[in-house]
Image (tube, rainbow, N blue to C red):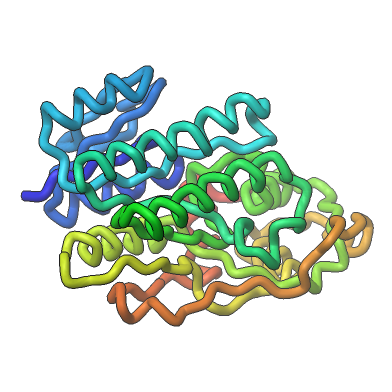
Length: 294
């Protein structure tokens, strides 16, 4: 049984990845600096670490076959120093460990680091730190043969996500019957349900563990989108809310992009296909939250 180390294994994505890998008969080990084992599966091993030395010693002791880095910090929750430590330094440490021990490495990235989206949005500290990690990975892969794959996640959503993100905030407002102020809502986004995203990681693990496969990157998304207007109307319908949706009451963000979709070119190579529609995903979130309030 292959041993997989998941960095950030108790986070929103990392927890789902740990569950999916465990169900797929991998021996899963989760590490983090403040790791809570409350929601981890019983058959997943979990360790709290404070520095790269402790992580290296743990890897030496356990005999890991592959490392996945799901750890991330956002600028709406943490200061810039925390973002640098997690999004850059921790990622770099994991890459160097993999180089030293000839281990495959999977890096959870974001579509924001694609060149056409770097200046998009208001989370420039987050984008900047993730871009640095992307560039480090590409350099180590090209010049030092790091066997690494970037999983480029589009708009992740699902139960357990940060309440500060768009879909959780929208559902909360709808359940409370509050007025929801929105832009005109014509911009289209590629929303990927977290369970499908976790399965993409499982596919990437199997892909990289095959020495015959050349490391390539994978866009994790549906390859199609839904407008913010359509999404808001659908969420209101599914919650049964009577909230007023005020389209056009919010200004568009600077450098707004009309359409953002994943490139599905490499989906076949990884034998991965997302299965959850936006309606199914929203329904699952709403049912997990506990129904609705009109």
